[in-house]
Amino acid sequence: MKSIINYHVIDSTNIGDLFSVPTKYFNFPGYTVEQADIRTINLEDARDKHIIVGGGGLLYSPFLQSFSKLVESQAGTKLIAWGIGQQLYGNSYTLAELQNFNYSQYLENFDLIGVRDFVNKYNWVPCASCMHPAFDKKREIKHEFVVFSHKKFQIKIRDFPKMTNNNQNIEEILDFLGSGETILTSSYHGAYWGTLLGRKVLCFPFSSKFYTLKHTPAILPVQKWLQQKIKFSLFGKTFFELYYKNKFSCKTDDWQNYLKDCKAYPESLNEYRERNHWYYSQILNTLANS
Image (cartoon, rainbow, N blue to C red):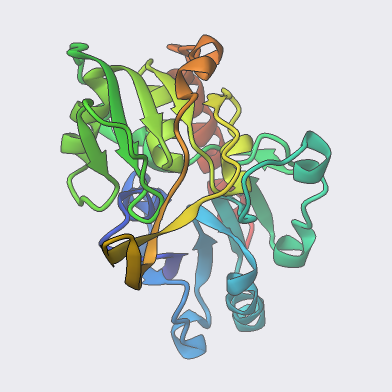
């Protein structure tokens, strides 16, 4: 039987990485399907198999070598990108900068390309996590605001319900996001899923990916993410400071000024699902012709 291997980032502490995998939602009759971590590619495992890369922000320089390995492994099989996107770390980007991202260095040898970024020249295919059946549940708004932070980039606003993406239960996360009228988030999937739930979203971005969504959330232009620290002082004198390696925070003083830009897009869920179904049919045709 022919085989498909779906490469993505397998990270149990990042819910977006776990549920952006297209082969969780689509079947491929006549093929065995497996999933593997794109960070640890074994060329022998990939040989003679069709490869799907996605989803997630995999168009990021640390993954360039992995993309090269996947191209090297191909001989008479198909290499397909599904719902992947660019990632440049920083806080603010112009449309020209987003459009000038060098997609080709990752994708020039692919047979079929679907990119989640709406600013790209390839097929636009949003993250396949929109296919999860938990989005069909109706949820009651219980809070004016909820805060959903990326585990590394945490939003420090008091008095609102809080959660991070370090959680493996997508139903619990969607219930949390759906409980808010407006979602304050530093997580790409927090913004994406909040939009799919028909909620308003205000983003605190740390990379270019937040600017590439088709249904644009409101964006607070973070000036700088600061490494969090513990400081020990006595009588006004600091004796030592201990910095957290992977925890950052930003100034949030004026976040309410950006609420006027928040919009809800209740039509987005059906649109994104239809686009993924369309791309799935394109993939089946591509595989049939291999």
